[in-house]
Image (cartoon, rainbow, N blue to C red; front, side):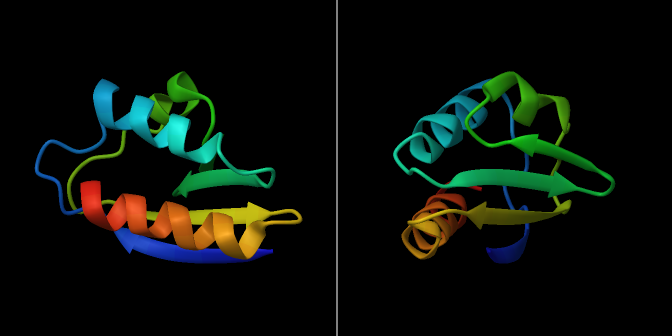
Amino acid sequence: MKKFTYTIKNEIGVHVKPASDLSKAAERYMSKIFITKGEKSADATKMLAVMSLAISCKDKITVTAMGDDESAAIEGIKKFIKDNF
């Protein structure tokens, strides 16, 4: 299992388009990828689940990847989030 924590810098948070793009990026990997905010967690490949976290600017999230390609998955999703959020 690999994980990283990130504080959202995007002023509008994670709305429909970024959540959709994140889900598509997560689907590229075989590993299970989860986004956690506070006590709630969501499968990163499920756009509506990601949206249900209501991630806003300055929220801290943790991304966890578990599986055969977890190292590649965590690095890829980390880059995606840093570039877009």
